[in-house]
Length: 423
Ligand code: SF4
Image (cartoon, rainbow, N blue to C red; front, side):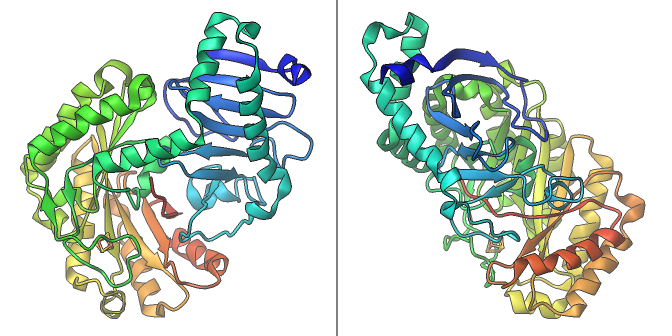
């Protein structure tokens, strides 16, 4: 035990860049703590909760790969895939990594890291480190390192699990899906639910809630923010983004978005720590079409750059019917046009859109999508990514890549694959 303790390198507080940035290597941002053994690097947030594990031994699959633990307590393995060039993951996802999720999702690449002992040994190493720290004599480390180790020991696996449940109970349930745009902050957002349920209950959807749509009361928002502040504690300063949930925040009562965003900005310390914070939310075709200019004026004037992601799904009537999405072709086209207009006219708002792809979908669906994206060029103004979401029950997902390539090639807007992730 002493020899392993002697080989630990403890760094109580390090400062990385303030914000997440896209990089080919595992960039650490914000303030964090680090404990290194000869074989692994363990990164902790400011509350002493384990955040990343990266192997530095010869068996580790790639020096840029690592595990990340989310606030929902999922361990996600970040892989560079089998092609780390510009033609690999980055060209499909807009990011350098593919998050491999420990739950079912709509991923195009199935990478079975569970059966790779070189990867899974990381968890054994984490348990070993925990045991070593637990058994270490009290006077073995200087006082600051001792404080870090005490807080690491307080956050054992049971506590981390309970904390994720606490987060879910604050927002009124687990966030079943995050907007694709949250990739810009590596899915690190503070969730604040301003409305529950959906306007639609689409047949194809694997993340919907059964609730009728309802905006929450302002008192509920104030209480969530109070509890979120206590929950995140010292680590609050490492967040640069807010997610207003749930599935259709844009449909919430008009005053709710400005109220909740402003209150969160002030009370969750975005004002203190974040220079250009981001705000994310989902909208629907109906809520986008109904939203008045005044609402967009108010969102545009918030101290956030706001991404609103809209599920358009298809511009083909038969496909909309097949998906059980109660929309007409003309309303989808109208929403698409409105998206382009808002992107062109509001400097602090960016609307993005999702369309489905899948093996069983018709040639008409794919053709109508290509037509829509080809004709969008004039007004696209370099904003408004298009996300293609593989249907969750579509077999052979990797075979969809040539189709994605075809859509990319005709589109004047960036096109990426949407990977459904929860919190
Ligand atoms: S696709 Fe969107 S609107 Fe439809 S059920 Fe799912 S979350 Fe709700």
